Length: 276
Image (cartoon, rainbow, N blue to C red):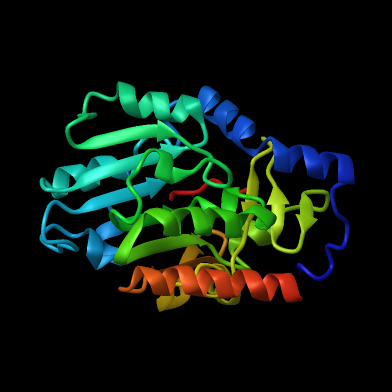
């Protein structure tokens, strides 16, 4: 099916969609407010690091959620983990405003801020190498592929030695990708939805390229999660496919810098409704 779709969005619109990614998500939250996504109570089932009592540091553990939206991830985490401190950022000012206005928002336990991780430095808000866990759940797919490596480098700057990135996003051949009609494709595995937001579909090889080769991180897990959907009435089976991974920063901060320098030298050389 994917091989047959050879048409791509015209160059003018490609540039517009890529440049206006944050603007289109801001419009999304203006339309849907806090009503679109459900709270993510499932995350600690997939990632043991998010369970209460799983401490990553000797003192109060620190977590950063990138692409926090309206807080569907952070509210369950704060409720289950009384000792955790959470940074939460999104490139949609409207989404961050919803987080800050929520009755559960406590500045003593969380800090929400606007940040485009492809260009705004996280270290301007968060002390360098101070974060134990970074959650990247259904966020990288909203970024143009050419900017994803910059986002990884940005995250590495605030990740504590031995800290982990927990990743989950759309995988290649996911049902949502297969359902895109002709005229929505920007490039291989990158599509635009009706509302102008981007959707990229990841392979495990792409994740390894981003986080290991470019980011200098250690790969702990990197695989696909397949959830089968069954329509008994129509007798149709479909697969939701997600890419799920864990990456860890080297214990030695010099090893991070060395790995990233090596990656730079190498570079120089050479629309489905979803419950997420």
